[in-house]
Image (cartoon, rainbow, N blue to C red; front, side, top):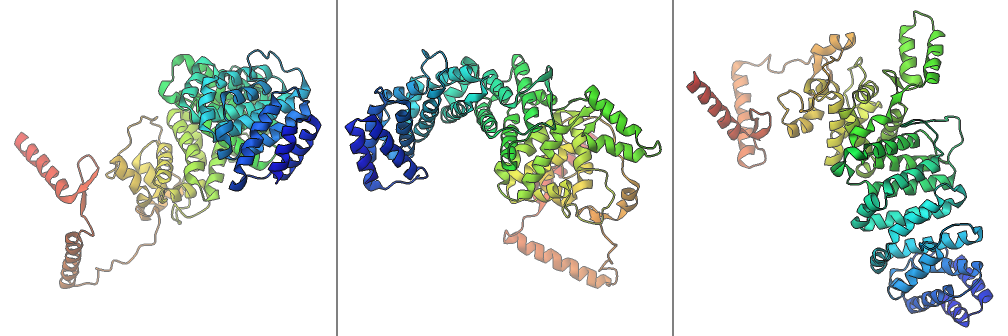
Length: 560
């Protein structure tokens, strides 16, 4: 009934009446996302009628009402089939000021029309394959970049930027060809990075360092939304950067990484928006070549150094431990470097672990990022090692029991999701410089067995990557407890009585044969398969392992 009345008024052609009836329809159906199939034809005709109104010279308020209703109707994919034509797309492009002939954005009264047109294009491109093809034909990505350049430094048109960026994200998500066009032909990487700089109001103090005002106000909701859309678009543009990275791109990637560092150090209007902002920053950092991630840490400024010196001077000279605590915790300093961004990433990771769900989407990106940073950058690895795997003192509890970051990561090493447990184990392994003995000290053999089996390191040793040779120092508490630590569980156990000590030789032989028979039965019924270690440390069926050792022995004998 609503569609029928609106269609009648739209066809009558009086602008004031059209505006009123469409405003009523929009208010009533603002939250409607599912439509009755019985009125499908009427909605199609209403869309066609609205496009006919939009080509006429009607007041701006009437155009806005038409576009609001069109945005609501474009949520229905079936309605879009007949109305998604090149002519209708061009009408929306003209209203959105996406035509190359439009040189400026001076008329503030036109901004609501531009925003609503961009919203309609977002819905139509997302829901219509025909619109996606037409967007390529009309070179929509280039037009969107051109519009961004017109408004990148003007904060009073954040809504235009936000929906321009959202449409750019959708195009680059749906068409891989557009990603390449944005990356190279349209210079999307520097353009979108500049949009982020504008949203964050960044002031550079050095080539890759920005001024951070920790006492400043949070980002506004509009600035936060703009930044999130820009981060999502940049993710698509750079998604394959690790494959095609060139030296000539290093500067641009470093600038982007410095902007992302700034992003991590600021907050949005709400806690949820801050988490969303940081989540998208983490995803984008995963696309940055690891050699460019060194800008996430930076030397202390003169002011920070002076502040540290003042704080330390206030402590008595004999308070050495307290001075070390100030250096490590107050400003997240390690080896003269500011580690705030890395500390925020670590806190972000821990929050994602504590959520207890969606580990694959929410946790693995930040874990992977921290792993690669640790592998490539020594200062980051050593700082994270201090935070995640501090020197062991209390070993009375199992490594997976407790509330520390280490305990939480060790629990993930036996998670049901293969990808989650692999990346958690890999992170801890890298923090241990890929040394098996160091990893087992913090996790126990049982928790680490999966990683070691996959790496062929069940017999010990270390990984393939090179790390500095500085030695880990054990605490006195750990040294005293070490002889009694169970290597499988990784914690201190009281000596247990040996059950066979009081058996006679006949009883021992009986129990041994009983065990052999049970294993033989399980093996013949293929419920259990005896395995052994090959000389290279990987697992293989026991017979094959024994054959390989026999060959090695024969070869050794022939040589002698």
